[in-house]
Every structure is written in C-alpha cells, then in structure tokens.
Image 1: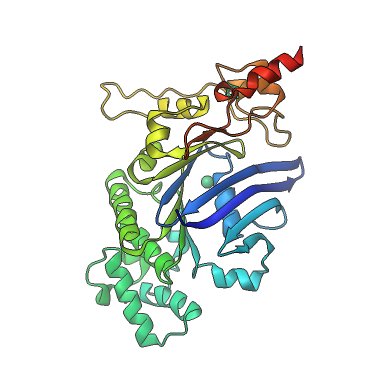
Image 2: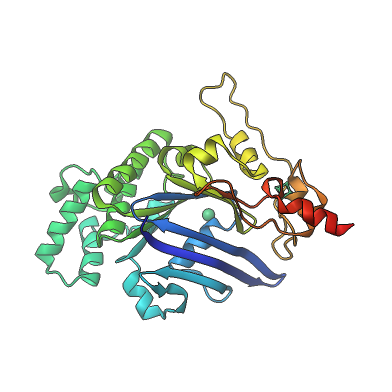
Length: 332
Ligand code: SF4
Ligand code: MG
C-alpha cells in the first residue's frame, strides 16, 4: 500500500503558567493512498493537536513540536519554514473544521472564495478558475453552480456551507484532506449526507482522508482504519472491522460500550468511570491504569509498547503482551 504521509514518534507540548502540557507523546501512523483513517478519542486526547501539527498550525509559542517526523513526499514537514509550508497547505494537504462559518468570509461571494485558492496556488486565469469552481461545486453536489457562485455564505444552509468548505479544500486536488469534527455542528440527516459525500469524493479523486472525531457512529460509516487515542498516545490501531469487532484495549472496549446502539431497545450510555490523567506530569506506565478494571502492577511501572495482533492491528496493552510476565517476575 502506497503511503502518502508518515507520522513518526510525534511529540507536541504547550507551555502554560502551570507548566508544560505534553499533549502528544509519541504518536506514529502511516496514511495510505485513498483511505480514510479516523483518529478517535475523548476531547483533550491529542487528536486535534496531532492533525494541526501535520498542517503545522500549532501556534509556536506556546506550542512546540518537540520531537518526531512528519514525512510527506520525502520531506519532513517539521523542518520546513513558513513560506514552504504555505505552498503545501491547501495545495497538497488541506483541512476543514467543525464550523463551516469560521472558514467562510460572510462578505465575499462563494465563487470568489473558491477561486481565490485556485488563483493563489495554480497560476490560472479568472475564466479558467471559474470553470474549476463550477466543477468543484458540482463535485460536492451543489445544484445550479453557475448561479450559486454569485451568492454569499448566508444564502446557504449549514449543510450546503459545509459542502462549500469541502469544495474549497479540494480545489487544488490535495493528496491529503484532514477533517476535524466535520459533521459535529450538523444535524443527523445532514451529517449522513456529508459522510456520504466524503465517500463519493474519495472514490472520484483518490484523496486520502484523516478524520478526527469523538463520534464512533461517524467512524463506523466512513473509516477504513481507526486509531484510538488516549492521553496523547495511540493506544490501538486497526481496520474498522478489527476495532469494532475485536477491540483489544480496555479503553477501546469502554468507548464502544459508551456508544448508544440504535438496534438496542434501550439505548444506554455506559460512561467509562474516572477521568484522563493530568498531562502536566503524565504517568510513566499505562495512562489508562487508573481507570482500567484489569490494571496490574506492571501497568503502572512500564509503558506497554505496541503488540501486534495482526498485520494491521496493534495495541499498547500489557494484557496482550507476552513480555508482561517476564517484567512482573523482574520486580520481585
Ligand atoms: Fe489496563 Fe494494563 Fe492494559 Fe493499561 S496496560 S489498559 S492498565 S491492562
Ligand atoms: Mg478537537
């Protein structure tokens, strides 16, 4: 499988008056061509910080990428300077956010806004740029594109605005699209339509998508692979099937149990007791230990490094690791 992006041992921290918050603590994953990789976890787990680091949108200071590599087309994005990053943002890697209104300028027609991206990155004439804009609106399912180009954001519904934002993100045919909670602000029916749109676009363009969400329902609909993050680390990574049907990490299992099931008579949410650890001084061992019903002594002492369950499925948990026994005997 062709890799379009590789994140290796990424560390990101933020300095605050209270000390240094270690928001991302050694995250690694590959993004394959044409796939949707979902990064899931509770708020504050580091999923948004990870995606913003790929776009190099972490405000430095107070943020800091303190280690690792982000490899795109044989270049480490962490080493690039702002002018080089500007060429990559939008043209090669683009990003859409939760609230479409923040991405759109209310005083400019959507045609001008879409064309701006094209003219900036690809030296096209206005007539050519307009043709691409019409093409893009058609791609994202907006009827009467010629006419709609002349309208302003407030003349569109929330779902339509998110379609426009997606059109803007795709206008330069990026290799990677990062979508951070793209449907959270939308109601359920519109949400389903936008997710369908992602699948459709992916089929037509082959774009690779990183989908950041806390919503496992969304993940179930579109993800090829799923990375589960907890306290700044990926604790489990696998195909959608593996994560939903053979979850290995107690945190993943807890997350799945906390999803209301549509087919169940009573949709009961089972929250995971406890709260994530303080990331000023994260635990040396497994960060989930304080909430984990299976925690052992080894869990608190040593971090459980990556055990492979299958070729694509990996987990950071001592329960799945043969090496745990040896470590336990070494404590005595
Ligand atoms: Fe629970 Fe230990 Fe696995 Fe952490 S490593 S999830 S504490 S069993
Ligand atoms: Mg977030």
